[in-house]
Length: 122
Length: 192
Figure 1: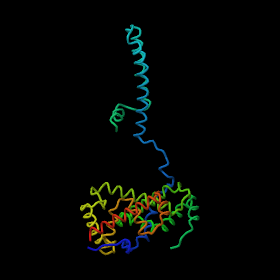
Figure 2 (figure 1 turned 60 degrees about the vertical axis):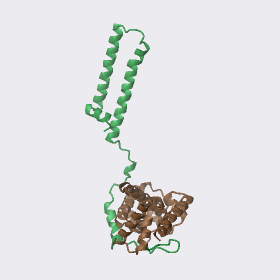
Figure 3 (figure 1 turned 120 degrees about the vertical axis):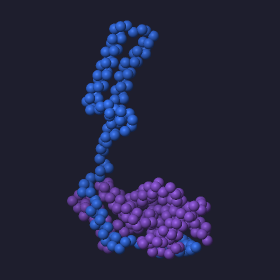
Figure 4 (figure 1 turned 90 degrees about the vertical axis):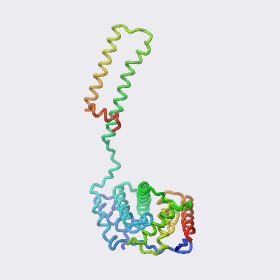
């Protein structure tokens, strides 16, 4: 088996290229370059998935605030039974919250399919 | 080949109306040195061609970010180096065989010998068995050691210039070169 002493031998640089490779290369690469010269990577584009995530976070925060508004006073008063008037008031508040969320979803044009897609991570 | 003054090219590259023509000059001027830098690391012509094309595409897309702090040639060699490392890392992921050598593993040596055999039959390789073994041993090094070894041994680059291309300290480069030489020596010693 032949050996190679890299301390005393110098490589003969045995690699070759196809004939005319460098003659045609510049023409070939210039034909591939896009006309638009602005660096695309510097342009921040909100991708659909990211937009979906943004809507999801907004919905989650809005829902958390609504739940906090509804349940925190209830927890504080948990030792005291609710009167009929308080029950009606809570019920009205919750209905109002539901309607508010529906309005947000309608405004953002998010339907159930989108919500399921977001929740499943797609 | 006519070498265009670097400052002239840089000022033309900054001018949108002259940019494309100036870039054509850059491609003509630097395609050969960049090709050989890449080819010695990736071994095969077709791979070197792909990486070289990506290098120039990346350079074109990022030309507005080139501020002239480094020399144009250094900037291009740095892009080529990074593109080559990316290519080798993707290649490593797709090849299940671990190609690192120097750990007295017969399987690694067998893979290197197989590569040397394939190289000898490659139409774009014109060396004898010893040269094929050297190239195969180099190709079997981890990517960064391979880069350092090829720049130092084949291109005879100074460590200071290599630092600008690789972003690694001179001490780190010397250590990598020493390790690469040791692994290649060990490979040939095991063949004796």
